[in-house]
Length: 104
Image 1: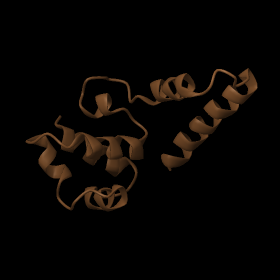
Image 2 (image 1 turned 45 degrees about the vertical axis):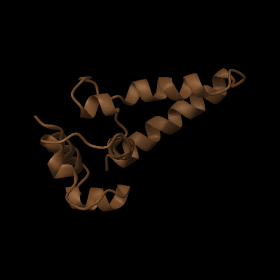
Image 3 (image 1 turned 45 degrees about the horizontal axis):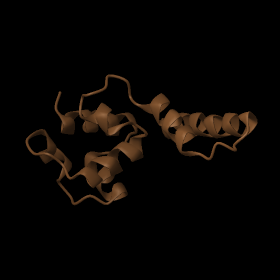
Image 4 (image 1 turned 120 degrees about the horizontal axis):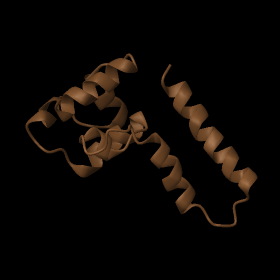
């Protein structure tokens, strides 16, 4: 499955079209469908990955997981080490809550 096809499937799961996705993330109309044949700009790929809450590696087929658990780990790694265990639990719970609500 090509990159554009994977994105189309993700968009469909959110009940939006690829054109709507392009408008939502600020990508020129018609760009995503070209991504099966051309490489996207890194910043545009990142916008799409961020919208769906997945890693760019997942979109590119380099990682079979959707990247959501590793995103929580990345966020935790970038937070000051002074965050308490309770604070970290709240951050992770917020991420999980957001993921669930974005799937609806």
